[in-house]
Length: 173
Image (cartoon, rainbow, N blue to C red; front, side, top):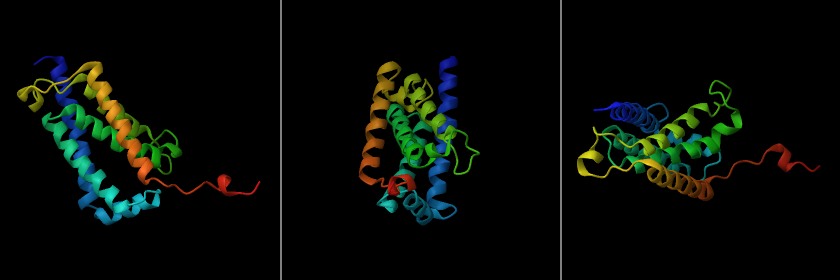
């Protein structure tokens, strides 16, 4: 096991485990799916129950896939896509820092960057991808992960996001 394998394993387990916990929280803790759906509706997501369910299940499955290193490029893309939607629908308008009211985008930006970097790095030797021979690394893996993340998050936003217009957009000036 070399340095790249150690780094890949650490990133996969921490990122994947964090995302699993996040998806689990959306479905089974606090307000559960109904609460998550209500929050999605409050930020302008149509079909909020379906979107909340899909986002939460994506987090559970993609996070678990990262932990074991299975389909790492696609799992990283799924995580990046989910967080791109969160970035655009909620966090970017609140500024950079997470501690700002409404939560800024520093946290989601870091997750997106780490997920895409992991796609480029690859899962490492201690992964199911390595075991079954589906390890992809480098610019090609990064390109695929980025394209999948941008396309899928764009599709979700185009199909479902309808934010309230700002007061400046609705005033008669």
